[in-house]
Image (cartoon, rainbow, N blue to C red; front, side):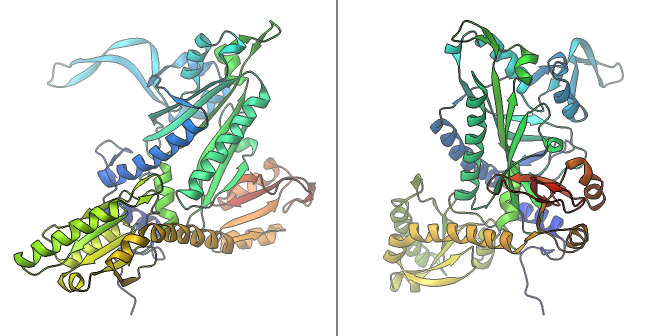
Length: 494
């Protein structure tokens, strides 16, 4: 008889539905009444705030400042950069009127047509570029290193909470430089920032690589990305950093006088991550009992669950719990105090336990009269689902180490999965067999994107990236047999 799980269906039974149920049972988000949009509930938003806090510090540590730019973009701005508008045209939401008026039948209708339609930003290169063109006059004005935290709208037809929604939250960095070398250094630096965040905070191993021309950001000269493997073996692009060359500078007239007195076009970059990272975190760590959170990003590190039979026991147990909470909060973890809550709601003990299991709280601490008598507590770990008794003072002394142990365990577990599901593929027959089964990452030499694309379309496989760490060397294309110096990760993807 199969073990009972808190989430049904299980990952093995129906992975996409399991994902939706984890979100629902953890109280992270729900679909809104606006098609394709979501309501991010407090637990999900607290996780995003923690991600935002860490990333914001990392951006500022690398010299960037925050600013804010308009939500609306004149359509003519997008038209100036042909490849950019081609890449986003089908996803744009367009504003054509500026007010409503009664329709004479008890309803409303758009009125006041705009002279020029406004695009609800799908990304901000064009509007920010137009602003930078006003700011930049001399090499002394450079570099400009700015990030904005914002929402964007891309009119997705098939949506899934956190992974792909019509409106989502993100950050987008936009920088301007005097030379191509400086802009490339920025592009690589921000990819490293994203990789560090993914691995050290999300406990999610990633591959850093370059996108092929067909997978580049529209209008970019080069796109770098971090790619992660989810538990079902599919890839998820978790962050991108783009070297835009002078394409947007020429379109937006971002020019400056250099040190020789000559007028030159600037070199620009853009880079971003979004609430898609929450989806990545869910699918990297969670299990058939619900959400599993890495401690460095968990809204709550530990929850104390008081256990008592009557009011006289309640007073004693709660006093003990409050004192324990105060001592635990004196311990410093990562960049702040250990985050501890007490759950004294009028619910049965089992209900409270599973509530916090499904929300992914790293540690559950149960305290009852017998525990108080022994000056001990009962601790459950979310990563292993193991529980054991421990002395109260030992817990206070060891909680930081325990949280670190959970963080490391989650990373190692995800890395072991990726390693076990990554395979070198040498020819078409192996490639077809691999992706007909239970695939993960296939590493292949390939001659050109154009030559392998028909096969990829047939098998619904994409080129994720050409890994930076294994760049160089020569091999033979798995499909054409031609000699090549290009090597990439191929996978099915979100």
